[in-house]
Length: 456
Image (cartoon, rainbow, N blue to C red; front, side, top):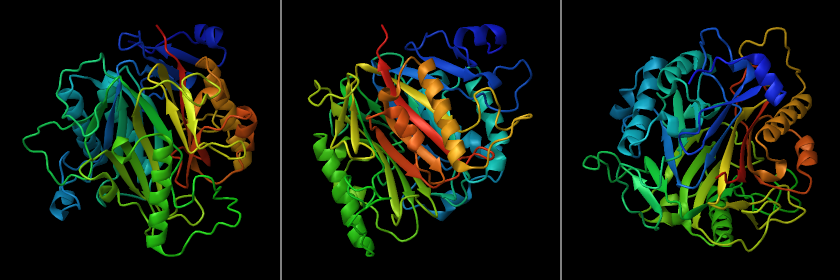
């Protein structure tokens, strides 16, 4: 479908410069493109979407973070396997996408089924080349996309890692998924005859339509009821083993509050800084291997915390017991005085709304070609502008701040007061990371996951 649309009609319909593209042929998905991406000129960059709405009616598929290494590679890494990665970032990008395409092909799906994509890059000056390769794959369909800057990936030679969320066309898909330890969570292993037993993660996982999603706030050694920026009498231990035990106990506590176990985890993104103190997932999970993305950072963004984990899990569907402000959302361990909810259960009966990385740039300004627009330097001013942009995007999606279930923030530390004002008394899950936003001049970036009532 062409993106060449009449600007006047767009502004008349939405009032702020976004348009829905996609006919809804795949699961009634809707992709909304910012005004600056609606151009008749040839594109050198990947068109960004403001948000995409995707149903959970047929379940969902998670893809682990993939680099240009072979889909199946040993853990710990073997040096000879790392050295075969090309230096050309275009070739690296094609190899990354080849790995993801192998999972899509195995399940009988296409790039149009991808609803959310996160890019982790070590060199932001390579974005244009990466965009050009992505454009040759996605063509006229674009998922919600966020780009962040990482100091180093799990493989020193890799400069790009991508993870994805995918929506199936229907309840049954063409490929086979291996029955998992927990019913309704099935690992996807293309070419099972060559799959390695010592893989540290599953390349993909298919979640059945009978499961609810459970989102978590960032897990560190801080207990879920302690604000890392205002910890009171709590002190993080200096000993890495003690921090590791605390982080393990914290995640275990939240899992139990949600009524699930370690083998219900489907995705974990780890931010590893110097100093140790991480969770030994293998010890807790036994033979279960979720999808994962492993990132090296100099600072997690959480005071004193050397490891930060962004976790997603699932739970068998059940009727709500603790009601949130929106039907189908159930917070766990939340208190009115907490800055965020430790975990949030999302009913299978809802649609997901993924909002691409939002910064202070207006929705009608291309951050890479801003023209006369100049971004304010003050981080607090940028935070207010980014919050206003999110507010307009939520309204365009027909939802409110009370529909937000997860806020992932990258960039510099800020007060967040503007966002608290917008949310009122609602507190979704939150993850804060001290990593580059990947957007020129942007000192803070927000990636939002929200929900909406299921459409017929």
